[in-house]
Structure formats: C-alpha cells, structure tokens
Image (cartoon, rainbow over the protein chains, first blue to last red):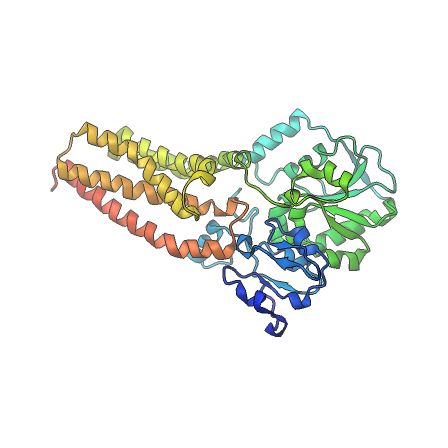
Length: 106
Length: 326
C-alpha cells in the first residue's frame, strides 16, 4: 500500500519521523482539515497555512489520513497492528489477513 | 424505481441484548448481521440527516440506540457482519461499497441535500473526496463514539475529545469474554494432560496462566509497567507464578535442588506463556501500529522461546529427580 511519493516535495518534517511509516509532505498540503478530522490519535493538528504533524509517535498506521488526503500529502504503510495475524502469516507463509471471518474471531 | 426504505427505531429489545451478548461471547460469529440498505428512524423528510453504518448488529444498534428523538436515515453498508473499524481496515466499509449503496438505494431521490455523516472510524476505508466525485455526496466524519452523536449534530462539529479513540476498562473487560472462550479449546486439553502429570497443582498453573493472559492482562493493561504489551505480559506472568512458588517452597516435599529447579521452571514457563498471550492481544487494542508490533515480535518472541525451553528443561530435570530417575 506504500505510495511512491518523490521526496522533492518533502521537507525536514517529512524525513524526521523514523518511529513508524507515517510521512507528511507539508509542501503539498492544501489545509483541507481532513487529516485531523479522521485521525483517532490526534497525530495532526490545524495550523495557519497547513496541517501540522504534532505527534507522529501516536500513529497506529490505520491509514485514514492517507486515504482521505486529496493531494497525497501523507503516506503511511497501513495495516493492522495485530501480532496474531502477523505470526500466523509468518508461520503459514500466507498473506497477512485482516480482522474478520478469516481471523481470530474477535 | 421505488426506493425501499426499512423502518427502524432507537429501542433495543431483549432480543437485541441477547444478540449482543452472543456477539461478545463469540457465539454464532458471522450471524450478527443486519440487512444492508436504507433505514428510516422516526419520521425523516427530504432534509433529514443521513448517517452511515456497518451491517454488524453491535454497530447498527449502537448507532440507532443513540439517536432517540432524531428523525434521520441510516444507510447500512454491507460489511459482511463486521464492525465499522475492522471493516474499514479491510476495505469492506469502503469507498466502493458506499458509492454502490448510495446508488442502489436511490438515496439522491430520498433526500434533497448531499451530506452524509460517517463514523470517524470508517475513515481508513473511505476516501471522502472520491465519494464526492462519484456521487455528489460530501462526507463528514462524525464522532468516534455513537454516544457523542447527538452533541455532534447539535454543535455541527466534533470536539477534539470526540475524535480521540480510547480504550477504557469497560471496553477491555467486554473483550475478555471472547478471549476466554477462544482460550478454552487449548486450556481444556492442556489441563487434562497436566492433571495426569502434576495433579491438581498442574491444572491450577494452567488455569491461572490462561486466565491471567485472557482476563487479568486486558483489565490491568494500562496499569502494568513498561510500554510494549509483551513485556507487560512477561511481568504479569512472573507475578502470577509467585503464589505457586511460595506454595512449593512452603510445602518443601522435594529436595533443595529439585525444588530450586521447579521454582525457576515455573517462573520461566508462566512468564512467557502470559507474555505471548499479551503479545497476541495487540490486535484487540485501539492503538498498536504494525511497525510497533513487528518490532515487538522480533524483540520478544526469541526471549519467550528461550525462557520456555530453559523452563521446560528445568521442569523435566526436576521431575526426573522427583520420580527418582536421576
């Protein structure tokens, strides 16, 4: 799901986050406000000209911001943070499943 | 085309509550479905709001039961009986299904406005700008919790608190039901085997470890020290072995070396067993990321395996000494 976005658009902020796969390219941001509307962990916040990534360490990589960003200013390798699914995929060599009938029954 | 609108209410019946309990217990797992389509609540007209939900009874019922006194439409997507957040992650609560459902229900002829309110947790599956492009409907993401909806609709916006997902003890407690149910399929055979090897004490160790991982761990989650779930579980498992260690030391029916080995074995087995269950709880939380869980697996699974191997070896040696083979 990783989107290819040239780093030319990136700034220091984009490259700063080494905690997870979330990348923000403020150069592209049109300040539509979607990212802080959808983020369940308050990673983004409004500011004057563009959105601001205030807490990348809280990101759970759900992908909501990337999917809803109309100008591809955000990229994140989204997935379910579920050890059960990852271990199962690693042991059986199959594709990592997401929640639902194929998975744990939760 | 004549639009078919299904009537519903904000009342939950005894039947609904039984369904919820069964869903929480993981019984009849894929049977908690609502028919996808357009529903009316109260007496909505052409200007009434349209809210979107999943066709999982717990999702749909949480929505409608929080809308008492509101005349509105509810558009139920076909998420195959999966809740909003999980279905959004899969993409079944998604752009394509939403566009499709708007079209097949003839929603544009039912309401004159072009506004939809989606649950915020549906956002990972829905590209709002694409829905607008395909159907003309603009998407607003409502609050995370249905219980905040009335206030959201009154104020016309969600407060920052409404937008933040939490994981309070009630939500964690309700998950323990299905965790216990899922653990029974290995706890029961394990207990039977352990009964024949180590008697009632063996069974107790298994029960305490498994209930520790499935019930105590979720309940104590934010109160256990350390950050990642695996180390929290390792700590809890070690703590749970202490009563057994105390009992063994007090009992003192084996010689000192065998006892020391047995005590260490208990610690080195119970800790990684609970630790592993804790690691597997990551998918149930509301905050773990894929990157974080991957790191956790690489960091802690080798430690758990090593502990278990050493622990089981010590247990075997201690057992052999007890039965006089060594």
